Image (spheres, rainbow, N blue to C red):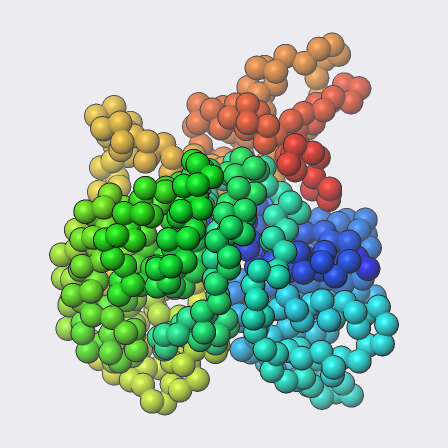
Length: 533
């Protein structure tokens, strides 16, 4: 049994990291005894020809993909193309979007054979058993498929009670050298489940209302596993990491016992942090916490069932500052009943915190309360173009606010930010910045360059060229590659050269010589990647 799992493209603005969902899916297939290939289009360019070459070589029996709402259209497009290339293979999609838009997805995309609904690891293992013998799909809970032209849903699957039975995410199947070059943290979880009922969130419905925690020793095993691949930063993506004080203490004490040198970040709710917990987190490597505060208006927080107060938000931010952890606050624009006054409250409160903060637009994803009970709210959803569900522009209106007014509000914040950024870039050029500001500017430009090299396959396109016979002069080969990449980008040669030199020194890229040509390639955990590029 051969399973090809596709990680669909994801924009740089969303800080792409090694896909946790794809890694868990791949590990479930591996645990079921399948031979698994991950085709990662997050850090390489997707083209139909490349997909065809990969599938022709691998010859999968199953092709799977996951997607969130924002990248569902491109994921569905790739799956449609994959089914044309390999019509014998069974096409499966899972993830939060299709889990709550099952019927529309199957009706619209005839190439898809199955939808996996909700938490998928146990479902996948049972499906593999059915593929091998029987095909009694109604016996597998948590899936949907077509039979005689009708859509069949097999009923609710219980959540996995013991998360410790899950294997480690199969990150070894990902093109990790590419992700290390990009430099974002690796995401992991220590638990699943969220008892809160925010009307704009899928957490409770996707992973259940009762938190299920992993054993601290296994959590830190995974941290060590991530470090062994050369990553140095981890992001804990639990909805409620700090809510379970005992778990936090156990994990931090295990990090301390093993003397791990690691930098990590976490998401947290403002009503779940205290000084003692934050001190312990800081002492064991946590340097940043992101809080979803959403609004600076108390009535709005109640309306969206956020379950926090502004006093708790201010206290959480102050505690982070006191304990040496950098707080970051996120606010949402376009919530039900939003008015100019509620936006002004949010603007005033966000500025008063004196921390890094940002705005996101409400995206009413399938499965959220706000979408399913839209008639109960002062809100109108203006589009079902899923590609616009990236929280970067207004796709709703309220009785008091047009989408244009929402966009203008955020644009004003962006303008202030851009002015400060342009001043910092100017200082970088004129050499008048502080060293810290110079690092921020250089890091930003390097990140954009690296993502362009990855997402446009510039190493593959520019890294194959004729050379003279004889030994390879490595510095000259790096210079030639950098010059060729410069011709395909708007980046400065010096920045490109430094990035390529770092790739070589770190082992992310290597070259091979054949006759009179030199070819550069990305390594895959110090090995040539096992699918065509």
